Length: 421
Image 1 (spheres, one colour):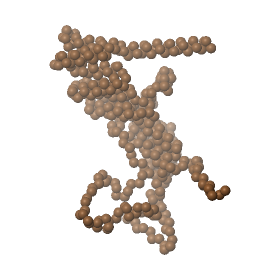
Image 2: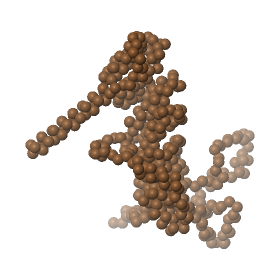
Image 3: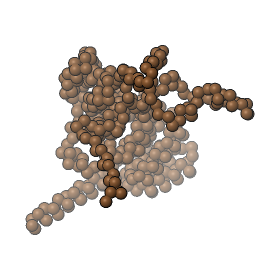
Image 4: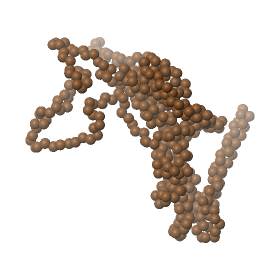
C-alpha cells in the first residue's frame, strides 16, 4: 500500500515538474525582433526594452513601454512594429480576456496599416486566437465558426500572402471539426429512425465539406436515409451511392455502394482519376498521433484534427441551413423572393368576396391528394369514395415521427371506466 502511494506521489511530482518547464518555456520564448539594426535612438531603445520584457513575461511593463513610444514619438519608424508588439504581448499572455484584447489590437493594426505585409500576419494570428479556443465537435461551436470566418477572410483579403498556405490548411482542419459535428447529429437521427432529419444534416456535410475525412460514411448513411423515405426519393439515394463510387473510389464502402446500385438498378459510374490521386495522397500523408497525444486526447477540450485533409480546396462559403427534402414545395413557389401588398378602396369588399381565400377552407380536412398541373381531377362515381392510384410523387411525405424498423410503437392504453365499480 505504501509503495503504491509513493509511486503515485512520484508520478504527480514528475507531472508538476514537466508543467513548470512547459510554462517557463512559453514565458521565455524568444520574440523575433523585426528591427535588427543597432542604434541609440530613443525610440529604438524603448522598443528593444519592450521586446526583452515580452520575452521574460513582463507583458504589462512591455505594453507601458510601447505605449510611451507611440505617444512620445508619433513619427517614429517603429510605430507600426510597436502596435503589432502590443497585440503580440496580449496573445502571449493567454487567457480569454487577453485573447479578446489581442484580437482587438490586431484588427486595429489591419485597419490602420492595410497595405503592410504584417497585416496578413495579424489576420493569421486572429485566426489562431479562435483556433486555439476551439472545442470538440459536440461542444460550443462559437469559436469554430469564428475561426472559419477569420481564416476565410485572410484568403480573401490577402490571397498572395506567405500565410495563405497556412491559412488554407487551418481552414481544412476547422472544416473537419464542423463536418464531424454535422455528421454526428445526422448519425444520431439515422439510428433514431428520423430519416428526413438525418438526410438534411448529412446532405449538408456532402454539399459543403467534401474534404471531410468521413465523407464516404456520410454519403452511405445519406443514401440509406433516402432509400427508407419512400419510392419518391429513390433517385436521390442512387445519386449518393454513385458519388461514393465516383469520388471516393478507395473507400471500403465503394464495393458495397456498387451492390446497392445494382439492387436499385442504378448506373455504376467510373472512378474519377483525380479522386483516386487525392485519396492516395491523403493515405500517404496521414498524421499519426503520438503516445502523449493519445493519452491526453480524452482529457483535452481541443478537437482532434489529425484526420483533416492535407490537399484540396476548402469551402469558401459559409454553411447555411437547407430545407429538408420532406418539406413540400408549393406549386409555383419556386423563384418567389418577395411579397407585395396592395390596398383597396374603403368599403369595397369585392376582392374578398370573389377571389379565393385560404380562410374559406379553414377547419375543413383535406380529402383529396393534389394533382399534377395540366391533369384533370378524376371523376368520382355517385355515392362512392374515389381511390386514385398514387404515383411516388403523390404519396405522403415521410415524417421524423415514424418508428424505426424493428421497433414497436406503444399504443395508448384505454382509460378505465370510472363509473364501473
